[in-house]
Image (cartoon, rainbow, N blue to C red; front, side, top):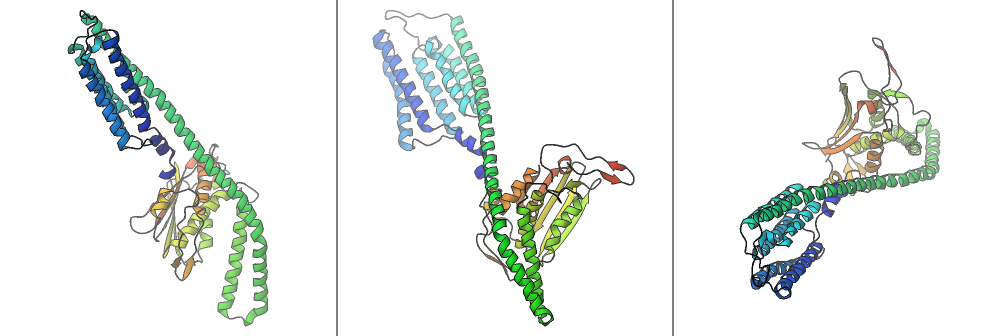
Length: 458
């Protein structure tokens, strides 16, 4: 769900804002101007004043162009930010060339662009900027205009001192770059973890609210469903053998569907519990058959296959997961043209359940935002075999995905190569079998259940 992807949000947030970048550069321009003016007029040093201010003016013009071209809230891409920082390094090198090279005490400012890059840009771009700074510092150690230390003469510092300054720039660039990158990376990882936690908590809050709504719906709908059942039974009794076969079939179908609705409402009140009647151990194939059985009378061909390596897994029955899987199968039957395939597979390490239909498949919006509430494929009514599939609220897939993933499963949505939607649910086998009763094999005797792990049972 890329729209809610926390990593994507953090990556976007780490991009430098142009306004911050421009303000920092104005600060640097002000400092450079003050240093040149102070040395020229305060200390009386004979600097190439015009050339120095021409170099400073180039940075000012670029700042003005950026301010005019882009809004203050604009965020620079990694490449754009790296190019601007490279320009700052080159501009500083040009200014140092005119004012003594590495003999100038301000040569340590080479570290500033590299430090900014380490906190905001990927490591490869920081490495490139660090190499540029060290390379230009090397050139300045060998080639530069002399710095007039006194108004009446010049002093050329020993090359050993210049080599020491170059070494300090090299080591400072490497150390501060790595240190700043490591600290900022840990901060980014913490921000990503926090964003992911907030996303999970938001989903859990949605589901908690829906739990209350489900209980209220079960309570409110119980009375009208009971009335419908009573009227249906009364019609069957009154018509008796005089009813035509078509009417009798319709009344029986109505009674069956009311029973099914009442069963669904009773499950809604116990999605998070393991109440009586839901603790028995069932085999994987039995669980699949329990899911498929209510759908066999709806006119869609259901093809069920079970195969795997090793003994068939068993699990402890969980109402929430059964509801989630049944919801996915309901959707597949609703949108299938003629056929739904339910495939159960297992190995010694994993368990899979795959549901495929031959309908139109998932829309791009559902695939991009899978698992978010209020995302639905039923925004428009669709005719199917003479029946009508009405508009939905976009909560079914959200509830199903959350309930299933609570059990430690992974749920993925995709479209088949041809037509149709594919939903795959997979568990690690030791998670799937957690809490199951010991199984007895005639050859091997009693097989102990695997150890417990944190995720909820199936």
